[in-house]
Image (cartoon, rainbow, N blue to C red; front, side):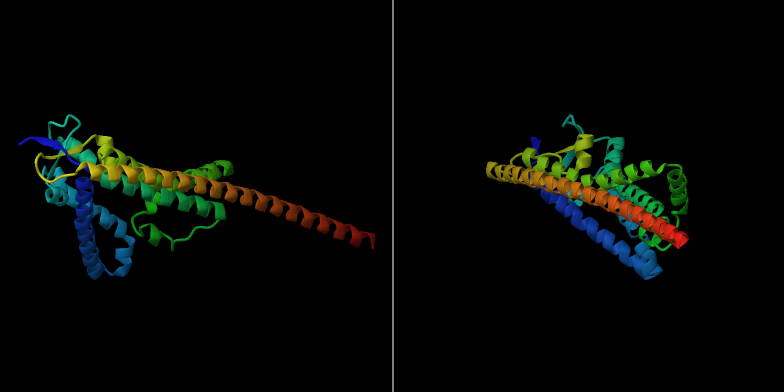
Length: 274
């Protein structure tokens, strides 16, 4: 039977079904760890457990050469950029890494870096916050970060902290941009598949997407783009306002300090004259 490209509605249903099963797997693994090791351990290793659950799910399906439960639900199959072959084992491994591992590492790296920069700027460090960062087993990473950060100048630390803040704000916006492009073009529902060039095919003749459904998705994509542009404009304006407020606060603090010094010197001179 001939195969044709899968439509956006099928890709969305596939992603939703996979997310449903992944959520169930993560929930079950979390409940097991909570029952065996307690709430503190579960809270400290929650993100790592979710990563392990996602990697296990995709390893047993995509990496092993089988359809995921979502793909089986809508009857679609993965193909590489040639649209004639199933992705190779290496190709599938890269896909899983980009889809599950890289977002985790990026999120953890930015959180650790921002925490250390803020702690350095405030002049204090606390061991209690390590629970939120993953508790045990991260001291070596934090020590490595602390050594690198202490070598930076004050200006470099401020620039790096602002860069981390901008990245954390831009990543969700970039994902929304990717989703809006998917709604318009109808391919690459996940960013990892866009990078690797992996698409889907379905059997021709089965119930699929008609033109009205595709038009609805295109309209949704245009609306999403307009909303994204508005959101970016608001965030840029808010960032400029925060920067202006910070500069005014620094100026006010310097003036207050200079005024206090002037008053102190004046009082000292008056005491001597008396």
